[in-house]
Length: 398
Image 1 (tube, rainbow, N blue to C red):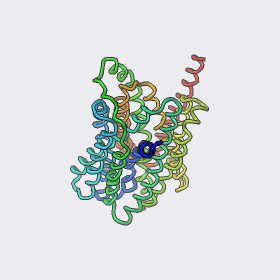
Image 2: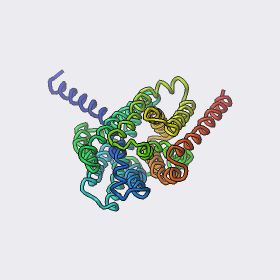
Image 3: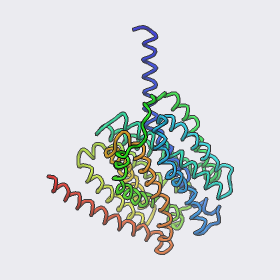
């Protein structure tokens, strides 16, 4: 083999390795949208007036990005019909970095909310394009495993962000945490260096494609409700800990970061678990773990209970993310994949955004601990229903 040919092969291998690295790690920027600010929720609430009004403002600053994602996700799905997924990813990362870092110098609540809204659009492109690229390259159990690895690395990013952002806030103030979003700038260079292949242009949506998407509406509704519940610990635990005299942002960040450890292991082992008990029972198990997590936090008598509850929240989250993504990919075609993922992400973010408007009044009415107990009770009923109907469905098809 000639030296030029050998060098070309080595370059191709390097680009393939770099491309794989990008697919497995770029998803972490989606996590940073919330985790970089979660440990400073209570501090932000005090800055914006304190009390229930300040708390809701701080929560909105975190969750308003979900509105941008809701707006952007369907548009990103459409955009992938004319641009390559890598081009869409680069565009999204650019928007993400510029809009996200604006919190360093913007003090106006309205402008800050607007910037976070735009950042959410960039985050949507990261989530959708990386999943679509993986689906284009892998199928079946291999795809489930790769999605699990991708989600496991997301947990690593979340762990580092929750710990690092809390310490950063204690050292330099909560506003400094917005600088974390500038990490997307050098990452754009990695995407460009990977030189992902440009697929053939996709045609416009057909009536058959629209039929596929319309039939998925029950799943979109399910995703909305699940993510509203799944984000209850992350968006409300800070206030429960403050009530229990755990006020340090660094300590709060470490406690919440417990979830990322078990999230990592759950995602890594998802493929094996599905192979062992099947997807129906994985879903029932996920709901049950979510319920136990809420009960542990609600009945907590100290930090150890809260840490255990957040660990289980991460475990269930590791299963839930991969389960839902693979569920949608298995029920769509290559032509509808981007749009289906776009609507899925929209439902996820809508659930996250709605959470404070449900849980904040619930906490005000019943109390911080009691609100978690009530959510746990609802999840317990859902887990039992899934277990019963899953067994009934298996008996019918046996």
